[in-house]
Amino acid sequence: MRVIQQKKPKVKAQPVSKKHRYGVRHFEEGVKHMGRGQYAEAVACFERALKKDPRNSGLLFYLGASLCNMDETARGLRILRESLSLKPDEPSRWWNYANFLYFAGELEEASRMMLRAIDMQPEKINPMYNYCTMSNAGPDDPIVHRLHGLIEKGGLNRVERSFAHYGLAKVYDRAKAYDKAFDHALLGGEAYGVECNLDSENVERIIRANTREALTRQPCGGDPSEAPVFVLGMPRSGTTFTETVLSRHPDILAAGELSGCRTAEILAMNWASQNTRITNAFESVRTIVPQVEEVAAQYLMSQVHGFAPGQTFRRFIDKLPENVFRLGLISRMFPNARVIVIHRHPLDNCVSCLFQRFNDVQYSYTNTIEALAGQYRAYQRVMAHWREVLPLRMHEIVYEDMVTDFEPHVRELIAFLELDWDPACLDPASSTRTVRTASAAQVREGVNNRSVDKWKRYGTRLDPLIEALGGMEQIEAWARPRL
Image 1 (cartoon, rainbow, N blue to C red):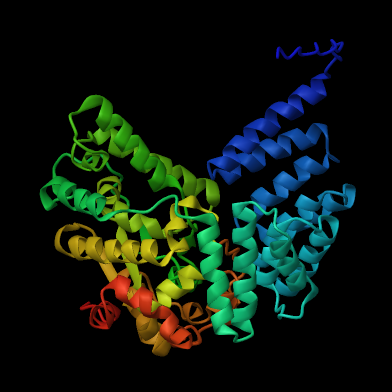
Image 2 (cartoon, rainbow, N blue to C red; image 1 turned 90 degrees about the horizontal axis):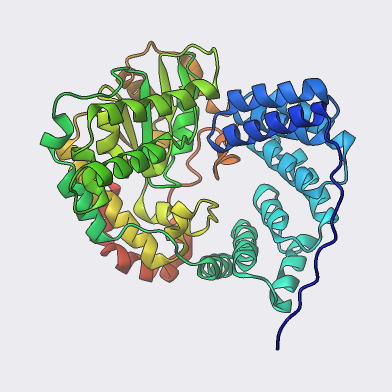
């Protein structure tokens, strides 16, 4: 059968005002800058557009979001509220506003605003997941009943099912219904699946490419600055907590999880594949020329300065956990950088990952026990290699030791960074910075050991994880690394 398509009626073009074209151009430029993490440039674009259209709620919302992302939280939240007052019928904006409140530590207000977003779109799963995460909702909460009903009804896609189960996992874990919580965490991971993980073959390729000779060859085109500090570890290991502690120092800029090293890796791999003979992408680190190293370093530094324009600092922190696999390239970009690695008990670390629904596909390996255990083994394998060959200064911390005997470990960190001691570092709970990670609520709780030995709650449910990691003897050896 031949399908006859009807012709669309011609629509007479409407004249577009100069004011409109001006606003659209700057809006589009601002959105591009936001996507690159260049928030200062984004702010400038949105402010220019608003000069011509000062009551445009969309422009105001993007401006407020950009300001929140660069830690100008008070101003950002005020502008977000102004945007919502002009156009209060946009549920996605209430949802995002609630998330910014949560990242800023305003947990009760965030929960209330998230409920408003849910009321405006009662079938949408993501705000319900966020509500379960940021509130103290228990098993009898109406939103929890609604999630159960939507799962039982069917019709949810895999992403929606994933969010629904992860939300319920949070609720039942708080209610100490640990078996039920663990079931929902596994169902959430199973629903989404694994789209990215580092297999053992690629780990060995990283190790073969990143020899001491490759990392110390001359000339080096990287930035000789001593400002960069890379805080690394597995996700959910305590990296956000450590960054927040350090952010209290007046000479340290906490820039969060920057994408610059991801971009640098892509740049290096593309250049090497086009200009040299390499058998796999990881070999790029030993073949790139100084000009590529220079451009890669400049890009990351532009992100840092865009995050905090005009701010002076002696050290800045990039806290992207996955950079642990890029330390060879980082040593070429910043030969005088420092590295801080946070280790947490493998079972506590892995259980925390299993319960967390990461938005970034790079961390989808946390969705199954098998993939997570494989990634954890890869992390330990590559860390052993860096201890042998990495030409950067590296300081390793055990999370459990840090929260148990806090001040001595913090003093060691500040001394490692070669900065004067500041007692404000002992009070991370007073931090007003925006925290855009899964630990946003935990860092407001201050120093405590409530996250230590949580794995013991789950008993025999962890037997498959213990086996996949190589047994308790291996796990305990990783839990007490020789530092």
